Length: 307
Image (tube, rainbow, N blue to C red; front, side, top):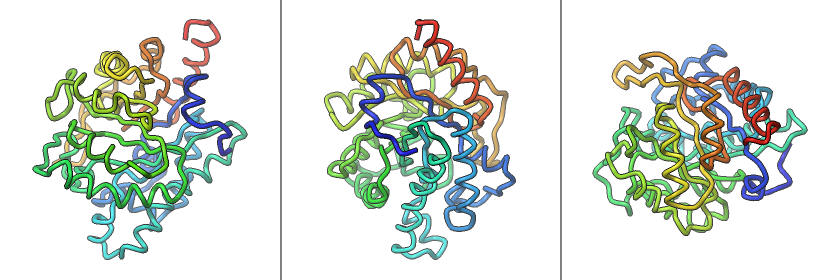
């Protein structure tokens, strides 16, 4: 159901479970995501499959759904011959589908509109590198139109996610000014630094003192990097942390496939919560079964009085 509390109020009261990876759930449902638009293609070609995936996470225990907007951009749709007006409708549809899935439960479910990095539009893996050769001003100009389109659809929060460097984080925060919505800022990191190699404390500090930012943290990273990053995010900003790592497998952009083994352990979430995480879930390759285990782990931790 649509929440009666703001996300900020909810985070002051409890830890909320995020969903897991949307693309892996869509693939489990038999969807072909080989297109450059990735899951965003289904906004036009199979919206019911996206709603089905969101619903699977609601049933798994997720209280926050991240939309299918990560790779949805005006530029990306234009390459497919989709005009600006129709593209705006598809961006809004990403929010509407998550909201519809939220109606499958009587629990409050918040909808986070996914705003992916510039590199996601390029579809070449550069969101794991950053440093695109664009200025903060140019990046803000890229992000602003779609943020406005997402905001018009009425999500509860904007998820500025999988951000590879501090310059793009600054651009995203600028682009979101005046949209009327809270945001969370989530970097993708490796070995205690941004993907662009920047000091993580300094990168998080771009959100310090910004009242529109309700949480700061990491996603789309190795689970082993999540815990230290949560501690750094809280120390640098004084804000609640958001954390949703990958399974532990690594994306091979050239082969467009995942390599290595899974290392996502829901039991780690108890330490993340003790370090200050209030939004906890999974990203790529983390499915509904793992989110159910995560929700059960956090519920048990709270019942024990240790969370």
